[in-house]
Image (cartoon, rainbow, N blue to C red; front, side, top):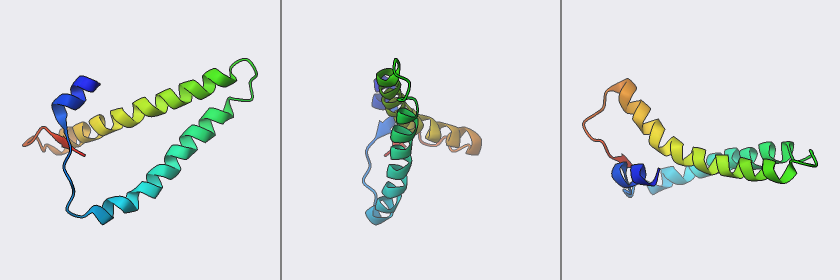
Length: 89
């Protein structure tokens, strides 16, 4: 995944930074729901409580990184915008 980020992802500051700030609370709500909701849902099982939390945190970290790569890829596949191959975040 680090190699894919090195090849395809570039950082580009947005002209309208205020618009990006409006999406952060929505992302944070979903992120907390994933971590607390699914992680502590399985924490009541005595033998697997710590592994349930660790696996939930790990999967959440991997999925966020994969979403950045795959969302732009599938947008290019379905809409045919192959004029640039870089993903700007």
